[in-house]
Length: 262
Image (cartoon, rainbow, N blue to C red):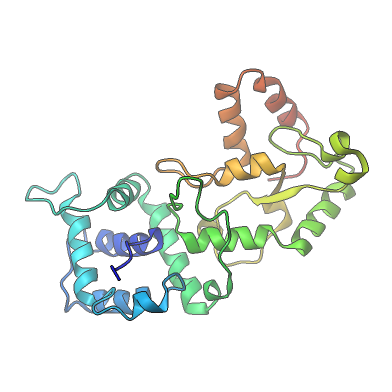
């Protein structure tokens, strides 16, 4: 069996280590490398067969990955090691959004340390249609999707919206399930975290931190594109204005009468 490719979660963690070391590689004997090796082997994303492979995510392999990050940085003047596109994409993300990516690394570490991330079962939408994993890491996206699919959380959000006397419709495109499907669509809506979990921290989910969305807009908020793996309803409305003919009116109407605070 060939060793599995590095996942986005692992690349976030390895890249953060290099950034914190001044974009310099770390050697096998470095304590931080050994600790990261242990952490990577504890991530709930690898099969027992992978974990049994000799040298899988060993300190040697972690050290080599830090070399990939260091030598492929645009400011490096020496020879570059060969690495895959996911590593190059993570280097670009770390350069463009260093604070955000370091926060994602800390969130993954804290989630593993607390045992929370081990509790979440894989979700079908954590990888998009072309198999690209979100930059924030599969585990954080998995956690977000599990929370957003919580029946209790959705029920409380609907109660909050209706308690304000507001219409239960998509905050992005204004789609109203009840208006379209009648009784079948009554009280149906999906919820989305307005702020990524790595930025919001490990605190309990706030209802005002959730947005009501139709299934299409919810999927688009989570869909991966180069350098982006999370969108707020406001960002998605902006994309609709510039990309979809006739969408300007719907987006403007949604802004004029938002479903809930976000």
